[in-house]
Length: 628
Image (tube, rainbow, N blue to C red):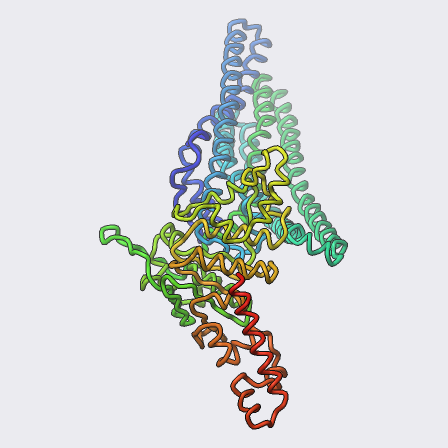
């Protein structure tokens, strides 16, 4: 696999049982690149390892005044230099290719998993962890994959050098054969402690990243309440914890690096002292002493690969563990496979949730009222096939009698679209924002009009200095931070309307707009989605009054169904949620029917005021509906 061939047509199915298994799986996927890097690494290291022999041969030729052997040594050194240079260049090229392709594979897997899970990903995994996995962790995992082949080449060369020195100069080579393995394994006892310190550092860095992300996302709110200094102080404290953890970890790695420098130096001293005595006794020649000394000195280079692979594994294992944890998340608790020969299940019809008993008939606008906003968000996720807690949900939402779990991911996405209460606007032009997979039946202009985005278009036109006043070509900043909350919400609604899915689920689509705009948006949704299945989770009377049917979900179950006015008249729990009545107010103010009885018997003068207030409220709603 070459860099120019990225992205992968299929990044594969990873082994996510553990971080180590994920690294092993990733290494197997890069097997061809690893073999290439290993071969070039062998050429590079063998070129280095052969230099001492060439130097020793040249020195002994000078001592013996042998011109032929000196010329032969010169040719050998030239060939070794060419092999060293070629191997170094190609090793670097193949190693970097392995790094980039491995990182790209992990990024594709994460992107695929993000598309599969949607907004539920951040409900199951902390935002800071998602950021850490998709940025720094990908780089560390690629580093381990890249260092693996270079370590293997270095290890093979170390074995070859030790064996070669034992054969070349047995007396001195035996010292090297014992000393080199000791050098390679000397840092192993320190690795667990270094790994733990590195894990602590990454954990604190993840928390600091999450805190920074939350602070930036809520900067406007913090400025409004004067909380900048509070959060700035928290981030300063978090960053200082990261710094202290980094220094604590760096000390251990510095100790490991020092050991990798000191011990080879000690081995060199031993080799020189013992070799000089052997040379004085005539047991080895000067050339052999130079050869062994040079070989031991050059073993420092492959030994650095041992240190590097230890560091790479220590840093990449927690990163791989986090990546595996994210990649192990699934849409549902069970994986359903469909036999292609029998045909894929088709979506269509009513949307039904067996867990709550909620049914949204096809072609109607169904409003859902939940007393708990968090429960409404979880219900919206379920309706889209993304339960936030899959282990607690044993049944899938049905669309036309077909479980969403049994639909291929692309078909499920096309059939049901969920817009949560905090939609995200990506940076880019307005035209790019509305360029989403869609049926083509709804034009962008119609969607913007239905979402009542006239003021947004005017603001973008005024801001488009270099686009000739064309709001569709005006760039929107990241997350739409240049717009107000209501403007962002309406643009996100327009994007959902353009997609024109078979079922559109909207969670509080007008919570950030004023009452007048909300009434117009409600009318726009009802008009544009006429004949299409739409589910709106809201408690606003202006939206509820536009719905064909309203369902009250109380304590996780659908307990009442009807129109807004019917439920307002006969269902106290519904009335408490919609009108924001407290328990005391509900006990003090009778229902409209009770108020009529009280008027007839003249036993409760306050009931007349309650009845008149109820009539005024309904009359005002009717007027608002007509004007809208």
